[in-house]
Image 1: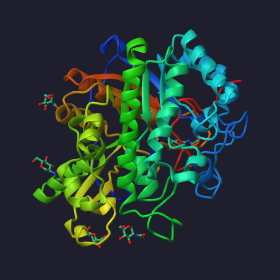
Image 2 (image 1 turned 120 degrees about the vertical axis):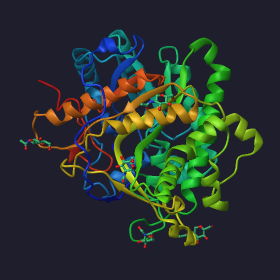
Image 3 (image 1 turned 90 degrees about the vertical axis):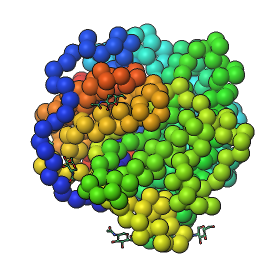
Image 4 (image 1 turned 90 degrees about the horizontal axis):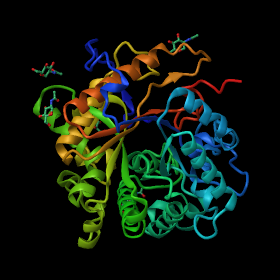
Length: 462
Ligand SMILES: *[C@@H]1O[C@H](CO)[C@@H](O)[C@H](O)[C@H]1NC(C)=O
Ligand SMILES: *[C@@H]1O[C@H](CO)[C@@H](O)[C@H](O)[C@H]1NC(C)=O
Ligand SMILES: *[C@@H]1O[C@H](CO)[C@@H](O)[C@H](O)[C@H]1NC(C)=O
Ligand SMILES: *[C@@H]1O[C@H](CO)[C@@H](O)[C@H](O)[C@H]1NC(C)=O
Ligand SMILES: *[C@@H]1O[C@H](CO)[C@@H](O)[C@H](O)[C@H]1NC(C)=O
């Protein structure tokens, strides 16, 4: 998922020199380091209404005019063409593949009976990957909650989600866990909560501004959703550790969207604002997983609008990760704006008390500037702040306007530079276990529909 948490863009002139090793080969990485690529169910599978699948909140969002008519009804048609795709993965030399399970395909009502056709689809896909020597890495929720649960109790806004999500995970572990070692319960939890409930620009499209959202409350819902995601994630991890870990021996991680933040100036206020941006975008959800509670500044600025953990919940959440999944695309600049704290009923982004502006160099506005020091910065920051947890770079890639050409030189340059900075971080002691390029095939993008793409392959040949 390519997604920018910054709404404003400002042109800054950046030095052309690029940080990062320039010459490297596969052999420079540790032997157990994996290279892969990935997709998500709604962006890849298609067959949206086939063989018993029901709507998710992403189907609903895409079909209500938010994405210029782009939707995933057919998408890459992976539901029918995945065997061909696995041949392409083999030809590319992928060692691992990251994909998500469509909850509403596997359990159409969100809870209750399993859809046998859905079960068969995922079983076949996993078997086919493994028989070609490709390691499956599975995400359980990639922005696609079953619409049935959204309608019934408001989805992630309700604590009822914890029980249903854990039961869904149980079905996945029971049926696929004999062959799958790497699990990420929730993709980009921070983007899902902020984009879906503060800004209203991704499913389920809720926010306070009635001009863009028909319902929602940006000053409280983002925090409630983040809280429920942590409760649900940790309940799933507890289930796995109690019931499956001894026999299946797998690993569970938490995935976040990261931006590398640079202070806009060297003034103390901007340096502190940059730390706040890290505390809100990364620390908000990662601190509880490592230390058992939200960062002090988040609690202070969100006041009573952020829920609190009981002692028991805090103990369950603390330590409930085996790795951190990092999605990274871009660098941004942070400028203090403490006057935002004077607003009543302020929203998540105002609690941060900062203005965030995207970095641009001479790169065309619809592409990411090539700043691999940003990925290095994120990896080094996570190492230093969170005690060098194992990390997978789950998503990284260049966004380009779809123009029907295979002339992908800018994308090659982007990957070359960012993989180089990953190697730099490995060499400076970061515990990085793998790198996944986003995305395997040209697919539906959340914010751009089919207008832009981050693909490795333009299309299947033949
Ligand atoms: C959001 O919730 C807060 C706290 O309950 C309330 O004071 C505020 O009026 C609500 N805002 C909207 C837009 O509903
Ligand atoms: C901040 O200070 C550093 C070191 O003195 C300097 O390299 C950098 O250009 C300064 N940044 C800004 C935005 O002034
Ligand atoms: C701070 O935020 C307020 C409210 O959004 C805005 O009016 C003001 O221009 C911002 N100040 C700066 C320096 O960006
Ligand atoms: C397609 O877009 C890329 C990136 O913007 C650009 O480098 C390339 O020249 C474009 N090709 C055509 C045929 O427009
Ligand atoms: C390398 O890692 C060490 C230890 O975490 C850290 O202090 C240092 O700043 C890092 N070096 C660079 C160049 O980032």
